[in-house]
Image: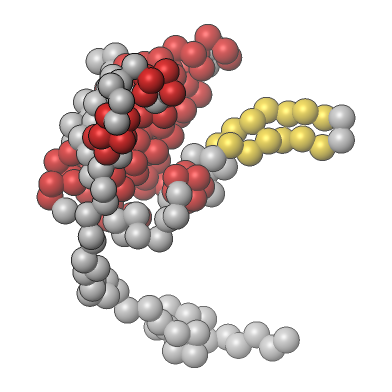
Length: 190
């Protein structure tokens, strides 16, 4: 786990506190099947305000975890300030589109969260020049015969077997039948 956190911290602006908060709030990404679920959990997904002929503004839902959004605020500024390649490109593209800086920083926050999730799942360090999704057939045809499989193995190494760890319970969850000392003594009848 320490190795994965160290690899996440290779992103300029993401430190130990940011990584620890995200991992604590998401339980080590254990409950998420894909990045879209994680983005929705954090409240960084976009909702549209439309009805009939009315087309309103789009905004983030904010219905998710506010701790994750709060902890990604400063790393988004730092990555743009230090001009980290994929985040700076996203910032400039969105800023030229609508001209609102804060909207662009929120887009960078979302990308940061998705990149952190990908680094955690793949157990890789951040590389600003790496573009795995742009691996084309032209690049494979330029390789010597038979080395395409070797190149694919270098890009997507075989997954290591993960040993599940049983985590202790963090806090007691009270059942609805138990009375809380803070509950109202007045009983509402239906």
